[in-house]
View: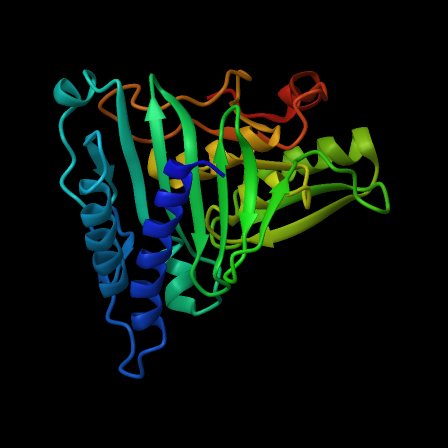
Length: 275
């Protein structure tokens, strides 16, 4: 795993340690709510400060777009050729529920493509790391590094679809029925945060349809890992998901897949919403 990817993994791990200090505290977790009704905790703030300080030490110094920092207008961002895209604590709702399914997400985006990403899981200490043309890896707390590859078939031959634990969407039911018509029985796996894409990246799931709102910082790091592992994230027109496209930082609806060789477009288009 090359040096920049290791440096970003170290920064993400430090942020994870800051999150765990709050997670394991006995005083409870005070939750604030932002204008979009998404939760904000002390852990989000601490992790953001750790990441900002770590990225500021890297050369060359690049712009940073973080969920928990002031966001530059697109008039400024559109000139960025390369920048860091950060979600200091992805899955804050899972954090508040104390179910362990939350992550630290750091991605390097160049020309709209998430080319490098680290997804760190504070509770387990596992990091998922990926860089296009380098590959994808799982890094354990003790330093054991394992290359990962998406698209591995399940032992029983069933298609495995990942769903969101906190954001169940009615459109996904139609996708599930379409997949069952094409492949037979479909195993569904519930998971929070960007861990859903990491399941695909390490060959533990095949498809994750997300037909509800997300932001660019929710997906970029895991997108880089998944793409480096051999998968992809497509919008509903089956164009690869891209970043820094305009003032609005919402992603379009998307489908993450572990195997890009499958004819997903022909299979899924009849079940996808038209807008």
